[in-house]
Image 1: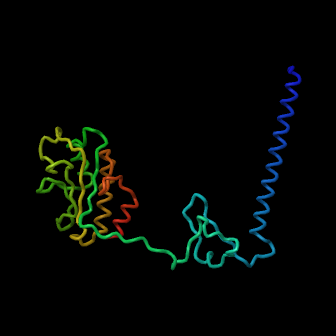
Image 2: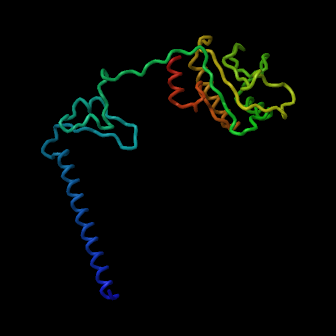
Length: 223
């Protein structure tokens, strides 16, 4: 095949592809317009049509829209569908744990240094107690929750902090002993999250898994 014939073949192929793309675009637009006309009949403005939530949003249809929708066109399997209140089963309530225990694990093999720990504890207002662990005290100087070292005996030294290293921290609180367990729990979570940033650690739940918002909310609702 000489160069002139090859050039003609290439041009012809390009034209066929272009025509095919234009035809496909026309058919697709026509189909979309027909679908829009199907749901938006200009002669029927008294019937309320379903309002769908944005694909990337968390909005849902309000109750009035669901009650007035034409269910011949509405698919209950649609992501925007919201069942009637009577059909919604509330999430199971988690029993109140006697102790809520989370941990903060160092990302480095060396662990948290004593000096860094003291500085971080000072930022969040934890105090060194008589049991040689750090504590959150309320206005009456009563303990809301404590923070211990992850390794036995769980205490922190009061000297030679520059040579002390701790692989992780253990946080614990007893909801049953508190007057306002939810408020203390919120402070408990915030303190752990701040320390995770200050010390560069990973927060683990009571099952030694990465702590999630779902776990936090589930425990909070149980209090």
